[in-house]
Amino acid sequence: MDAYDSKHLRMGAKGTWLELSLQVDLEAVEAVSEVLARYGYQGGIVIEEAHRSASDGVSLERDPTQPAWVRSYLPQNDLSDESIQRIETALSLLGELRPISPLQVRRLSDQDWARAWKKHYSVLHVSERIVVVPAWKHFRERPEQIALRLDPGVAFGTGIHPTTQLCLRAMERLLRPDMRVLDLGTGSGILAIAAAKLGCGSILAVDKDPVAVDAARANIRRNRLSARIEVREGTLVPGMGPYDLILGNLLAPVLHELAGVLAQALVSGGILIASGVLSEQGDEVAAALDAAGLRFVERVGEGDWIALVMASEVVDRA
Image (cartoon, rainbow, N blue to C red; front, side):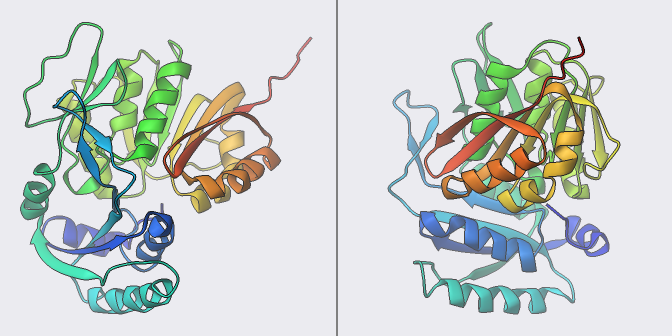
């Protein structure tokens, strides 16, 4: 997603933040997220669906019967009040259609945010092989497991949300050794770290948000992968690549907007894993990617969310 004005973003990154939060019906999650992204700090939307303890007593599983919390974090500056007023106006219109709670605004520092998040962050078994481990928790993986050790900081991206898990599981099935990988909108770096540990070749992780870039680099160092993963501030532009695999855990409108450049950035036969899409948006996003020249491979889902696997057409050079 496009980042909030970088000057104000950097001011907030080392100082005081405003946490904007509200509880919403699951069907309203995407609409509320887009409101926060449109008028607030677009690099920091957190969709916190309800979770319950899994049968193993250690990890968490999604609870689809409960509403979700949607949160965003604004750097406190002279634009904050105006942004909040716009958000509240837009939310009042949405509240006429779906159940949403009043917007809550809370001041907190980077350190306050990290402490608050850690209370809800536990070891997560994404699959039999992939385990997401909070950096502050002790966990000894088995030989067949891959542990992704993360501290998301203010960049988010913990692996808890279904869109991230869908990407991880699809990548686990589709990634082949020596693939050239692009992690577009890397956030905490979780997908790039997983790609490296699953055995891919070169990896470029990009994000428009400088806070996310810093967090990704820190997590990559934490997993001892700095020599394998390059991190840049920016986004995908024409001329980049080509890549064998692109990981795009983005919102549906962003995938729609980038469809053409995504297709151009893949090698013949390359794969795009496009996540961050609500089930009712799947056909529209798939159609945009198809129009850009990508072939539909599969659609996988969890709850209200889906990921699309698309491939560039293999060119017959005979």
